[in-house]
Length: 112
Image 1 (cartoon, rainbow, N blue to C red):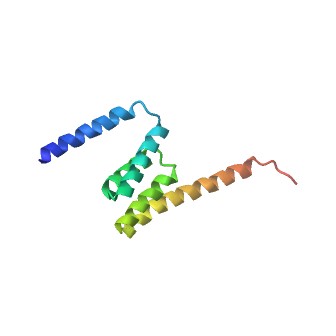
Image 2: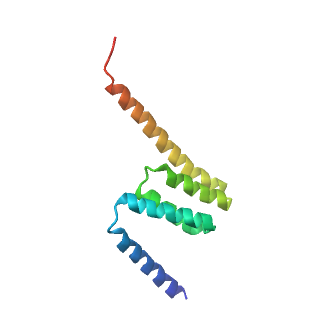
Image 3: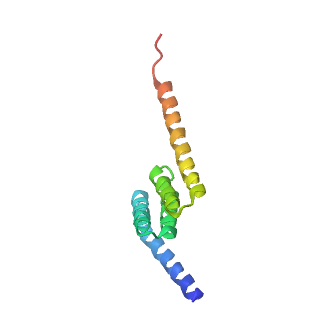
C-alpha cells in the first residue's frame, strides 16, 4: 500500500511539473493560490498548506500567500505557527515600503 502511495505521489508530481512547463509564473502562482483556497474551504488543511507554500515559492513578494497560509494555521488552531507567515509577510511589506519611500525621497530635487 505504501509503495502504491509513493508511486501515485511521484506521478502527481511529474504531471504537475509537466503542466507547469508551459505556464508563466503569474499563472502558476494563481493556480497554486486558487488550489489552496479550495482546499482551505473544504477543510483539507494539509493540502492547503502545500498549495500556499508552493504559491509562496513561486512568488515570495505577494502577501496573499502568506496571509492565506496563516489562515490555514488559524483554522487548524495552530496559533504559534500562524505568527511566522504573518511576520515574514509584514516584515517584507514594511521593508519594501520603507525602501520605496527612501528611493522616492532621494529622487526629489533639492529645494532651498
